[in-house]
Image (cartoon, rainbow over all chains, first blue to last red; front, side, top):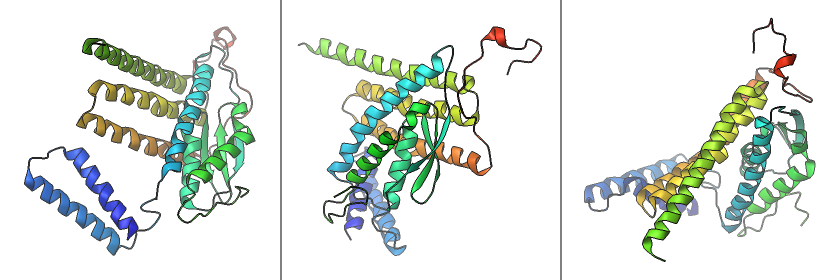
Amino acid sequence: MRAGIILLVVLVAYWLTLSGYFDHPILFVTGGLSVLAVVWMCARMQILDEETVPYLHGKTLGYVPWLFTEIVKANMAVVRAVLSPDMEISPTWVKVKMDHETDLGRTIFANSITLTPGTISVDVGEGEILVHALLEDMTDADGFQEMGERVGFSITDPMHGKLLPGKGA
Amino acid sequence: MSADVIEMIFTGLSGLLIGTGIFFVLAGAVGVIRLPDFYSRTHAAGMTDTLGAELIIVGLIIQSGMSQTSLKLLLVAFFLFITSPTASHAVAHAAHQAGLKPLLGKFRAPHPSELDQSEEPR
């Protein structure tokens, strides 16, 4: 039910953003009908759950600025390596431990690794991710550990108070 | 402060952001050409659509001010932020599944004078 209402609000906002016409009743009506049809279909397919509508809150948004600073830092390192005449790189293949049990946590963690330039998650398995790194010093285990903990913190639902393993709480 | 000065600051800021974005996209393109193997090239390509594209979009948002266009650009930035790492991962994963081995260890670009002149440049 909660997921249905969130999906409804998000779809209405999405429709209004893309349409931008507020003076044509016909567009409002058809827009509302398509939003209702989508929500009804999702309900009928029984996919209105935490996975379809990930519940995001303040902590999730707090993760984004940290991720951005990491992206900028890593970008600098990659640009320096690529543009220097010698181009000294040390491609490395590492397995990174992953404590996340939920699909959402795993997706955010693997995507964050890929988003930071210089590291790409190649294969996501049970409890570990295979990562290819452009520079060897990007494979620092503490860095991945910190990122994993921040992901875990950011997706912990304050309403259920469920902490992910590996948080040491 | 008059409206002119504020507008000038905004124009300058957005120009700066777009310029920096273009620099990163260009560096990504250079990287795709210079780097030695498939996996390392994926890094350069990924760099292009994280910082490069996002900076350009932020610059465009400042240009268009508080408007419908800005909201749409924000949506573009959001979708790019979600889809580009997914695409990078899909490409790298496909290569791994197909059994492509990465080049590992230290690599240094050879100086042009060290290259065998009889060979075609790679």
